[in-house]
Image (cartoon, rainbow, N blue to C red):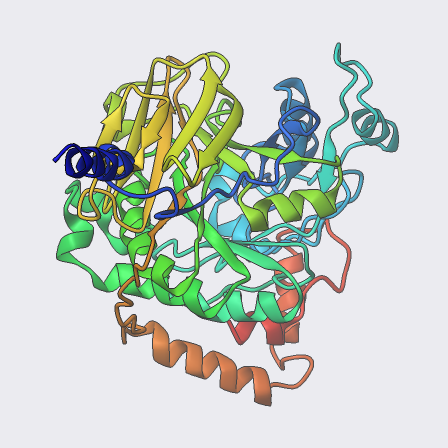
Length: 461
């Protein structure tokens, strides 16, 4: 009898860890985009990847835009004027007069003034800054689909595609495809504007209009060079519900092994707008190659001074953003830990922006079932300065096979427009017969060198 009792107690003791944890140590695989970051040696760099000057539709001269970012403590700056590839800051870009003319109330067609050679050299070497930190000059940035009616814009980086490219309304695929062919990467901008969520003011807009989720998920699945989307830009008015859209997209793409990243931009056009949203990139080396690597791998945070869903429409943050000093995951324990300072609250969300926890720096996934936490979880920090977005963590349980929903490209008028664009790209000569319009527009904008634009490239958009 004693032997049977002892055997029973031993069996219970062996089972107890599994009963306590609910799952065994091998039951989780947690994807951490910050896994390779050396938190002790890598730098954290304040970065602006979307800003306009008077070279397209901004009201501030190019040289003043660069100087203001330097004053605001930016470490990295990429100018992204509409239809206008960025060049070194001491040069005049090949601006598109049609864009400047459309926004005459801002540009007044005034001269595009670059930095002097000395000013640029000083900024590239940190002259005049207490820290002595330079500001990195990132050229070849551009806002694509520059003049389409619905503002269906996107960013192009690190390649020579986009000069003079107008684009077709609601056609994100053509510029994504052409940018990728040229060796660049793209991100999608303020999707709530062209999708209609901004006007609806309805948090359930994307559930009622799922075609938009499929439209963007399709792009991320088809084109690895399309790195992510803007979840908070400007005053967060056009992007108020775009974090919800982002969550809907993640649920569609993660089962296919695709994880787009969350970007944030100031999208500034006028004075006082240059510090309202930016990204903070974790990089081993301070160079353009590591910046691109950070954008591709997700080793960055997004930050916005407006957080309409969490802090209301009237909130405007002030001060320094929260600082994340370490992120760790433990597959055996099924936990994710965020070590940070300068924040008031941490919120963990999953499955279409459902809040699963808040106020805890360590999320224990073992405490939730697969209906409460699906294929991913992400966190954001709230403070008096604004909202800081941490990139998503994928979650896979042992033996789990994530169901793959069919993602189809919705058929709207952008589809035949893209077909026409591809046909024109194949048939058009090097220069369009509309070359004379270049000279006509030059009369409105005599501050650039000719020839400045390939009209075949412009028309085929």
